Amino acid sequence: MLDAALRTLATGDVAAASGNRIAKDAGATWGAVKYQFGDVDGLWAAVLRRTAERRGTIPSQATPEAPLRERVSAIIDLLFDGLDAPDSRAIETLRAALPRDGAELERLYPQTSAELRSWGRSWIEACQTAFADVDVDPERVREVASFIPGAMRGLVSERQLGSYYDLDLARSGLTNAIVTYLQRSL
Image 1 (cartoon, rainbow, N blue to C red):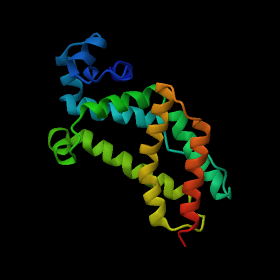
Image 2: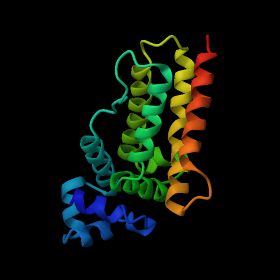
Image 3: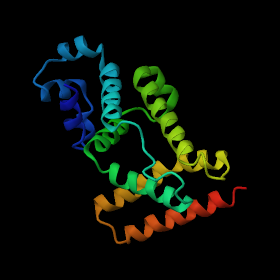
């Protein structure tokens, strides 16, 4: 059922973020979804857990002792490639269907909200680990880790829509800006 949910959500159709639609696409009933997950919140939380399991830990993809620029570039490349994957498209579709307000999301979908928060923490921790042995301000690493996903979603969107910009140049510019910001942090 989770694989059917991911396939359906990966279409990008926000209407796909429906427990009934997922059940139908899985060849099941809403009752079967409720039995397995409790409610739609349980289903969405399980979908997020499944994608996290499939993704595994977030590697920095930079070799130990790699220079700062190589580490930043590895993270940028990882997201540029990863955010276009079917699981990422499914997550984006699900997020588009959920409430934007954090308090409302927590109230209506507490399990889903908890999963999304844990993803945020894991991402920050992965970035801090990637730069742990580099002489940079940890608070600036947190700041950078906080904006990289949104910036990369923008570049991936440009690629998906067909861009008039050189996206390799854009990634290089973003990498250079981040490196400069981190180097000037001390």
